[in-house]
Image (cartoon, rainbow, N blue to C red):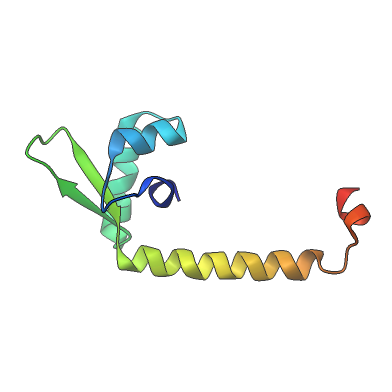
Length: 89
């Protein structure tokens, strides 16, 4: 989700993702390796190996669309029967 939030171009620096999530860069690096193995994330290496860019794969994008649809459906089915006042309570 952080990548979709930051992704203006094709790739996002690890330190930008870490800053958004308020974690250390090494945390992002560790978990991005796991996401890369699952096919959800791609690392785009730069000339400087210390500077890594991350991007979402098509697999991840399709998964996020499915999740968004499911979440919207769940929210609407969970709260459709409540009035505004009942929901606020």
